[in-house]
Length: 387
Image 1: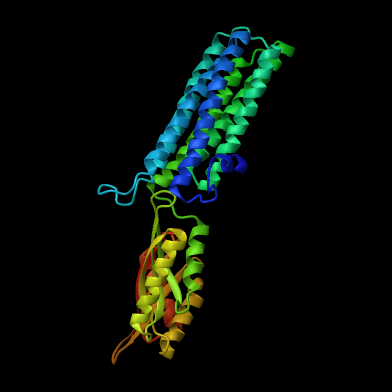
Image 2 (image 1 turned 90 degrees about the horizontal axis):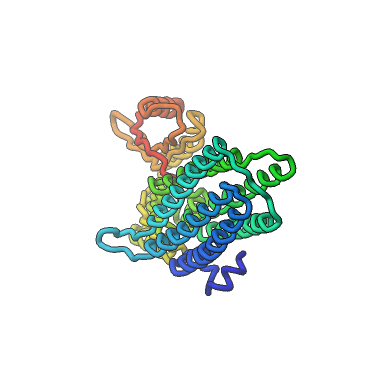
């Protein structure tokens, strides 16, 4: 399938380029419209030959599939619009909106197929399997599998929810047509009319599938966490820079593929040259933009590397905080030694799965500190996880 895209798309491997992504959408849309138009015509012929209402419903399903291909194409076109005053982060999320529309169309088709199936169960009519009908249905299954694979490969290459939703829609169509074929074969050899029952079963399958796709699409619109691979790549790239001692509070904002923004805190030696540290941060930000297309804002957190007690305290907390909960991590550890009071100040990252309230967690962390440093009080800031 990659060869098909390479045949029609110059620089097909540059999948983060908006122009290239649009061409992927164009190729899948053109194939979708042409194939579904052919299927509507031949399935209508099959309906006339067989009298099967499930074949007619399947033909109407293909007619709507042609429209979803056009909807997906329009969504990609809108997502390419540049940022403006009203949408400073671009229009990349239009792609999520069109994926949602495709899902809604899938579910509407499921409802209509269900109604047709129930009517067929209540008032069954004779159906007939001919050689022409058999060839048409088998051809339909092959063409739908082709569209499913085409959209699946394209969707994974350019990370498109719209193409992945269309892939599942085409897969559902292949299953639906196969079910229709099975019902005709059973009726032909055993005189058992399952046309209506098979239509209902397919409709339920399509509807449930649509709900699952909608759940994934809405998650992107609402704001799902970034992929683990993306987070790990950013972390490793940051830590590969000499002078960066640690990172935390990484937040990635997703406004569509190729339109991601991030912010992160990096720990660097407090005793180092501030100007040089600032220059390093500028260089890192520029490299992310040039190499990954990621606009990242880096906050500099100074940590002591020469105060033995501060270093010891940081090592103790980072190594032993797992005793409180293995999902916890700490950062920005610093100490204030006074005449009457000693304080250790640090942040603790608290994932949503930790079974404590913030108040309970602060008490447990205070107990952890006092196990080794009884003269120190704690000032803890609880951070939430955005990864």
